Image (cartoon, rainbow, N blue to C red; front, side, top):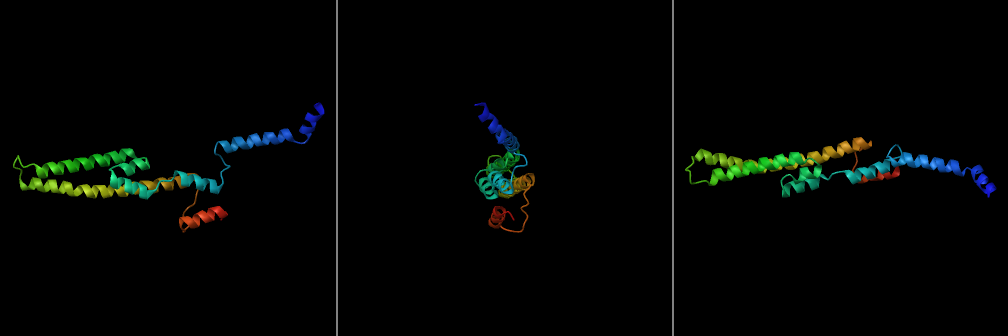
Length: 161
């Protein structure tokens, strides 16, 4: 029995196990063992879709910002939009106090600002997505500014070019 164990040692069994454990430890913490295609897959999994943020902001105020991780900005935009809309409705429809025509004009201006604010919110949500994606590419060390489409880039990454 003792001869069997010593022959395993002579063949390099234990050193090979030790090297495997070191490699597993290096790869487990997400260190330098990432290849370019693994980074690209991680980018694809973590990136934000600007179209989804735009549609979310169109449907519900601040939903696009919540999707991009900037809920505070979305809540601020939603509060300002609600304030403008409420102020506009109150100033335009309140006939009991006999308001001056200038006050109704202010109400109409407030109501006209609501879609402008919504369009700004949509643009900011898309911009936040693009900034998140740019930061993610920089963090992962991906150089995506190759002057090609996404499909061409996937091909280049797959081929190792």
